[in-house]
Length: 287
Image (cartoon, rainbow, N blue to C red; front, top):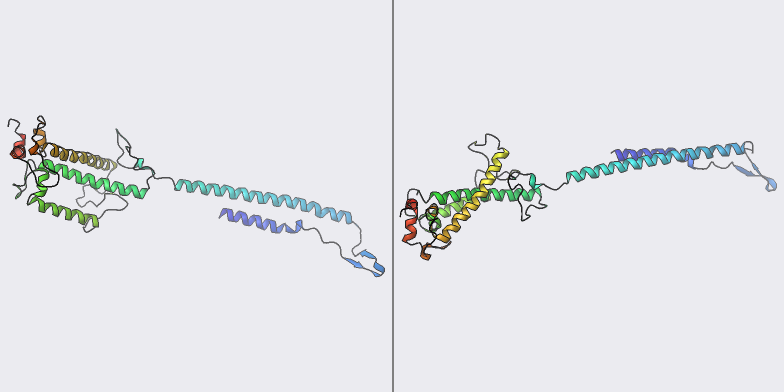
């Protein structure tokens, strides 16, 4: 708006001083008989009247040039100010300033996944990280708990990965998949806030109305740790054939028969040796 007003002022000044740039009209002349030409106003003071418009024109031209220059400088300053404001507004999203950046590693992104990432894409990645972390925390806790405790009607279900292929554990697996699908497509009373990744509400009011930065960092770090823990438990079971807490009992003896191992997908091929290491008996180091 300031640049427009400056430009309008310059135009108005130029229009008001326009007559000063036009040379005065020549005195009217008339032709007499016999071709004699004479001035109507006479020649008295011709030199003085011609000099006056010349001085006024030079001063008016200088004033007009100053006005135009001032308007150009003002418009240039305002354009540079708007450009600087736009540059600040369009500054790249800083992923290193978000929750989850804690010592000792700080902002740890060796793969460069968050390099030049937009805010929308970062929120999507953070939502995925929180979901995987929460699932890993429940999965790691479940793999450990089932080695020492069985739910009613699940006493005959083996511990570890074999539970997902043994009835009634297999039926429960499909129920869990169905629940996860309902959460993913939004068929549940809790929906994620698009502006706050991982926020599905707080029905138990555990956050007391607000979640602090410290609590967010704790959840992210626990989820990251649980993902490694779940991967370690599963890898150890595939290698040793011992599930959950039983891996702690046989940690001193890594010489396990090949028949005690079982595949990740498919029926368990564990033998009686594996069964003796499972459940509560896994803690009997004397056996």
